[in-house]
Every structure is written in structure tokens, then in C-alpha cells.
Length: 223
Image (cartoon, rainbow, N blue to C red):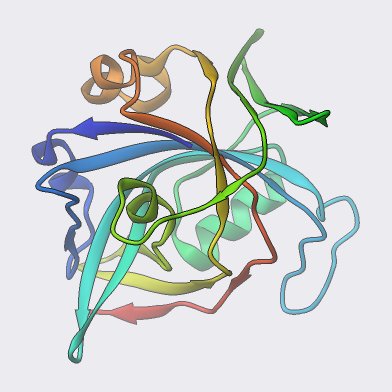
């Protein structure tokens, strides 16, 4: 997870109807996130050759009022996966902005040193994000920037004049703060000119989350 401060005016046009931007200490953020899906099932069905795959996404943080509570969630600017069927299903069922590209990953964890890299190919050029850390993962402290980034449990996308809402369930993750990181990508063509300057500067924070079993529940449409 590489996390960048961003002018909220860039995110408002991308926010679905019915949600508002979520702020941490008066700042809004976008995150580049690389992750690895393992043993994936859809409606309890494990599809051959579609169980394990990479994803890299750019996301930002929103919230929606429900009864007396706030549902804190994320919206995606773009999501990259290597499987065309996964991208198609995500667009159809969740309204997400998925693109299918060739991808690969490398994860090395030995003797207390951890290195993670996710790569994708556009045209004939490979692009990537990479990060290294050491030691053991640490719990995320309540009220911190790290908690804000990791503890959003809803997803929102635009559907017509309303929005689609789905719930994400997983335990609190521990994290490794990054010792070093590297981003190699043409941000202007990948995410748009409006994000290029932001994403070409060093992030505010960078860390690796240990991950866990995750459940995603069916969407609801809110007018």
C-alpha cells in the first residue's frame, strides 16, 4: 500500500451519488495497492485457473450515512487483473473499473526480510510496484493514519444516477512499515493526467499488510 495526499477536488467527480469523501485529519488520500488473491471462490464455486491471481488498484476513501452510523468504504479509479473473465465479472456484478493485463508477482520472505513486487505489462513494457520491509508485522493502532487506510469495509461504485454498495469482511491486519519502495509506471496514461503529479512524488506512507481470509457480500443499489 502506497498512500498519497490528494486534493479532494480531484476525487469529487469520481465519487458515486450518495457518498462523500472520507477525511483523515482534514486530508484526503489515494492509495496504490497490490494484492494477491488465493483460493478465490464465487458463490462457493472455485473456477479452474481463476483461483489465484494478482491485482493492482488505485483507490480513494469515502463514507455513506446509514441509519445512525457511517459506512466507511473505498472507490476505485482503476483495477488491473490478469484474468479477462475476472475483469468482466467485476464490471458486470460490481460495476468496478477493471482492466485485464498480463501480470506477475514476486514475494520473498526469509530470515526476517520481506520483499513484495507486483508487475503488469502494457503494450510491450512492464511496469511495477515493489516494497521491502523487515522484522515482524505490528498491529495497527487505533486512530492512526494506518488504521484509516486499512479499515474501510465497504465498496462503492456508480450505477446510473445512484450507487452500488457491497460489504467486505476481514479481520484487522497487521502491517510491516516499508524500508524501501519503488514505483515504475507511466502514471499519466495509467491513471490520468490529474493524478500524474501526485503519484510521481514520494508517498506519505508505504507499508505491507499481512492479508487474511476475505469475504465480499453481494451488492445493493442505492438510488
